[in-house]
Amino acid sequence: MQAIADVLLGMGHQVTGSNNTDFSGRERLERLGAKIFVGPHLADHIPLDISELIYTSAITRAGVAETANPEVARAIVLGVPVAKRSVFVGKLMADKIGITVSGTHGKTTTATLLTAILREGQLEPSAMIGAEVESIGGCGVFGAGKYMVVEACEYDRSFLDMPPTIAVITNIDSDHLDYYQNLSKIKEAFVQFIKLVPPNGLVVACGDDKNLRAILPEASAKVITYGFNNDNDLIATDVKGINTHTEFKVGDQIFGLPLPGRHLILNSLAAIAVARQVGVSDETIYRALSNFKGAARRFEILGTINGITLMDDYGHHPTEIRALLSAARDYFLGRKIWVVFQPHQYSRTRLLFNDFVDSLRAADEVIVAPIFAVGDTEADKQLVSSEQLALAINQIDSNKAVALPDFPDISAYLKTKLRRGDVVISLGAGKNSEWIHQFKNELTG
Image 1 (cartoon, helix red, strand yellow):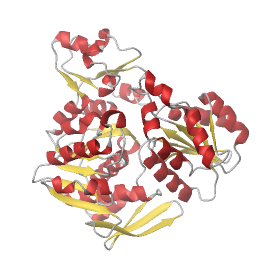
Image 2 (image 1 turned 45 degrees about the horizontal axis):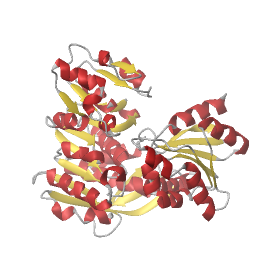
Image 3 (image 1 turned 90 degrees about the horizontal axis):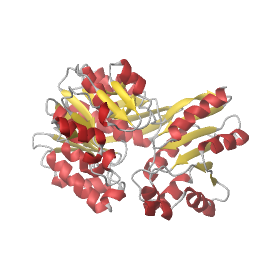
Image 4 (image 1 turned 60 degrees about the vertical axis):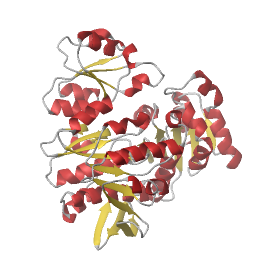
């Protein structure tokens, strides 16, 4: 929703919005002219001169109809159009050449990389990304150019409301099982998404992902695959990790990133494929990748205090955790890695329980925070707990994990355990990000 606000403000519109809790981008949006209410959703928040109301599907996740929201109900009474976020994004894309970035993992970083390359190439793209990006000054930007880069999530099939000219698909994995139930239904949704790309469009897909490669024949558009395997169209070779720098080749062209991780190379390949197709030179791509700063909460290093390095990452799925910890091992060579993990959703934790156990074992020490409930039923909450997750890890690796009842307890625990040279990584999509910023302040003070 912040990304939409950034774009609309850039277009010169007046924007009013509300959120039930405060958020890090509020001050930025208010500086740009938005009026924002924090707290319960109220009908009085809706201005009389409103021309359209846009809502996020988050307000319907607990099975409540969007019309039950007081602000949506007020807009309906006023007779103004009401649109789900994804539908409105699709409408904005209609005036541009839409480039959607979808997939279970890596969407945000890939969309950020692609936006950075197009901006370096002076193509002035618009963009809507699911995190704050320093280089564009927010989550979204309105550009004068003809391209619009959109991060398109598969949850509740919302990406089907965003028909692209160019579609990037990073991978297909089991996630959002509270909505899809199984991997087969997820793949069916991605088949529908691929079929949205017109015959004169382009599909850029990770050919190393077996679930994704299996559905590529469904595309009517041209398909370009990328990856490490030799049967792809774009292949990364000669991969080298040089301190905190990653280098790789595509054909005879060398590219580099100031961050570690094979997953970031895959994200870069996707961006390179699209950039080349729209006419950006390899020299320009090289500059953009070399200066890439990433997005908020994607391998975001917050600083080092008294020899202890703090990092924040959005990873909340086992596949993401594995990739993040593998990259962290390379980046923080030989240092002890503590992970503070807040599981996101009781249903996801239960359905991917064994995978979470396996992925978190890559850390030296694991602290499990209380599960962050999102759209969970009371039955969901009775079936799994943070304590069970920590116990399962310890049954394989004795004394590696502990579950603590709240973030103040986690702070107190870490203060007695941390030593110079240690690394603390906050992982998850809940309140853990707020915690690690507060913990940084405590250590600094």
